[in-house]
Every structure is written in C-alpha cells, then in structure tokens.
Length: 359
Image 1: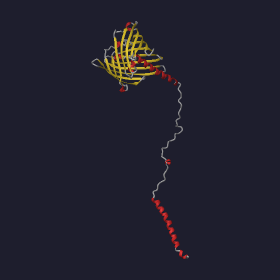
Image 2: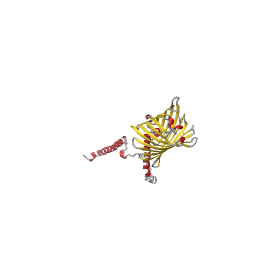
Image 3: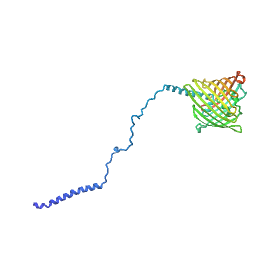
Image 4: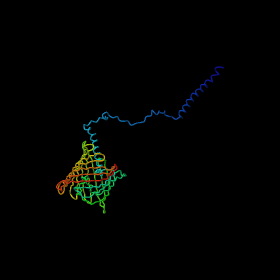
C-alpha cells in the first residue's frame, strides 16, 4: 500500500478522536448541572448552638463565704431555750393536773370539768356547790371552733381565785344559770392564744353575752417566764368588764414550780377594781399527788383602796381513779377585813371529774 493511499484516512481518525474528546466533557457538565447541589453534612458533635454569653463576674463582686463572728452570748442560747421549754412544759402539766382555768381556756383539745365543792368555816354557806363546764373542740375546723357549755359563766371571769375563797365571788352576785357559747380561737401552743366567745345564758328569756381573751408567753433570761393574759367581756348582769393577769414563773427543781400571779378585775357598772396577788409553789410528789402552797392578798379600790383579806393555804390534790377523778383538801387561814383581820380558819373540799384528750 502506498503512502498516498493512507493519507485520506489520517484526517478522519483525528477528527473522530477530537469529537469523542469534546463530547465526554459536555456530558459530564450536563450531569453536574442536572444534579441538586447538597451541602456537606455537619457532624452532630460539631453543630454549634448559639448561647447567650455569661458575663464574667468582676473579681471585686465575687462573694466569698465568711465565717460568722462568734457572739460571746451564744453560749447562753441553748440553756435559755432548754429552760424556757422546760418551764412551759412543767407549767402546762401542773395546770392540767390541777384543772386550772389556764388549761380550760387555752387548751386546743376537748376539756370537761365537773366539780362538787364544799367549804367549811369562814365564808361557808353550808351548801355543796356544783359547777360544770365543757370546752368541746370541733375537729373539722382544725381546732379553731369550739362549743362551750358552762354553769354561771360570770364566775369564770376571774382567772384563778383562791380555792374556796368568797372574797371575789361576793363582789359578783349572779343568779344560777347555764350558758351555751361558740368560741373561735387561734394561737400557738405554749406561746400565744386568742379566743372570742359569743353565747346565750338560760333560763328563759335567754340573755346574750360576749367574751374575748388573749394570752402571750415570754421567756425572761434563762430561768424565768412571763405570761400575760387579758379578757374583756359583757354580761347583762355585770355590764362591761376587763380582767388582766400577769404570771411570773420559775422552775426551782424538777418537781417544784414557783408562780407569782397578779390579777386585776374592772367592772364598769361598779367602777371598782378587784385585786388579787398570789405567791404559789406547786410541788409534784408523785404521778398521783401534788401539793400547792399559796399566800394571797385580796383588795378592792372602791369606795377606797383596802385589803379585804389575807390568805395562807395548803392544797393537797390526789388522783383517785385513772386519769379523771380527783380529790382536793385545802386547809386555809383567812384574815378578813370584815372581822378586823382576826384569824378565821376554813377548810375547802372538792371532788372533781376532769376529762380531756390526755386522760
């Protein structure tokens, strides 16, 4: 084959190779344009969430915990709190054992008292006095609402008269009656209490009466406690009146409590103060017996300030049965003004049934 025969074929081969070379890039370019452009995925750990920058606290504003500076009087707190609680606990248990008016008025539990009282000697009327009172707690009201049933509610305005003494009762002469009342009260056990009573007295026609009483307990130092109580009331037989009482208490020993009580009663219709000062030692001999030693001064302000009676007594109280039946025997020495302060002995006896949630 000659050289001239292959000359025409060379240009065609070159042309075919050029066409193939041009077509392949054009196809690739079209494929790239047709496919969607997908951004590269960012790994989960590398995704950053924008956060609000936390301002740096200047060194001057950084708070450094400091150890409180010890107070030289801190060592007194523990014994003070301990003794204060002990005084309140012992006083409450004594008032409960003796069935005192404080327990009846301030307890947030149901309390019922039935008394048969006989006085022989000075001030005796040769009768057996019966008295009763019930303080019924309504549980559905969380103890704030009580129902009261009392005989001669006017006789309960004096916080703690001398057992068997007629000195204060003679100034409040009322007919025998029975009263039904509703009480709304609030308070903190052993610290403060406040009660409001609205009631009706019988027999017919019924006569309304109202009473309000508040008390507050305050520790004095590490050995004493001051308790203040005040009552205001209105009875149709007495008119408006007010009674204030201040108790100063101290534990002498585990079984001995000292209490100084000052009581003043004001009756508006009589424009008179009835005053009562007691100095008492409560001694618990056992879980069945306790003894009260008391010296009292009784006075009035109208028609002139005068001491109407001086009293010294011992009261022996014995728990006869279970937790509710008690017997009291109280020999007393009176020195009344109406007998020119001559010695006038008396003997008071009482049988009491006392019920509450702890008995």
